[in-house]
Amino acid sequence: MASDDDKMYISYNNVHQLCQESADKIKQFKPDLIIAIGGGGFIPARMLRSFLKEPGQPNIRIMAIILSLYEEIEHAGGIEKPGTQVIRTQWIDYHQSKIDLVDKNILIIDEVDDTRTTLHYAVSELKKDVELHAKEKGKDPKNTKFGIFVLHDKQKVKKADLPKDIMDNNYFAARTVPDCWIAYPWESTNIVYHQKKAEEQGNDVFLDLEDK
Ligand code: 5GP
Image 1: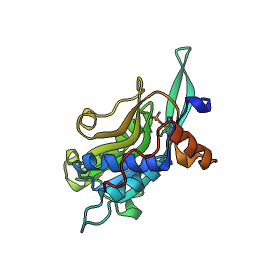
Image 2: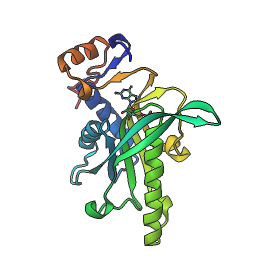
Image 3: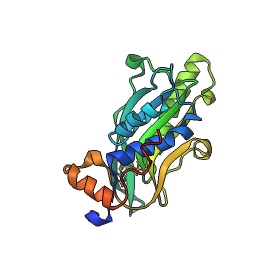
């Protein structure tokens, strides 16, 4: 477990402004739907939606999926190696929500891209859904586009890849950071201390609020 001084403390205002700063670039992707990966993607998704709102247009709908990452030891050929398994705790109920991903631009949001395992899982499973639903409708699954927004992308060797078209065109990380533990405000049980640490580390407001 990282000590307090090794952690990067991020304030709510910082998260809000990272969303604000990223919105203009993300607008070029023209998202039709947001899929927030819970729990960390929920608050950034809601904040970003306000900055993506266009006058006269409805708010972009946010759907939630919940994924948990379990580290487990695989015994492959007698050699123990750490493995990663993603558990689907909640997925999209296409029937009840009447959500259709086909022909849409879908923005997936999580708070952090660490080993990339979770994002890889989300993209590949959502792509499978799109392929199935597009086939049923006689449509081309390639007309569904995926984009990704994360607050922080950690600079490290990733355990999984994302499709090249996403990485080249529609991967939005507000900040690229060294591989350290990031403490987000919604996890804090002492928000006064958390806020103080974020301010000390320069991870509080950074945009001039008079600007907009
Ligand atoms: P992955 O390794 O699949 O990219 O990340 C899996 C999940 O681990 C993330 O969605 C996030 O919930 C959690 N995680 C990874 N690194 C950090 C971190 O530095 N801080 C926090 N708070 N969560 C993290």
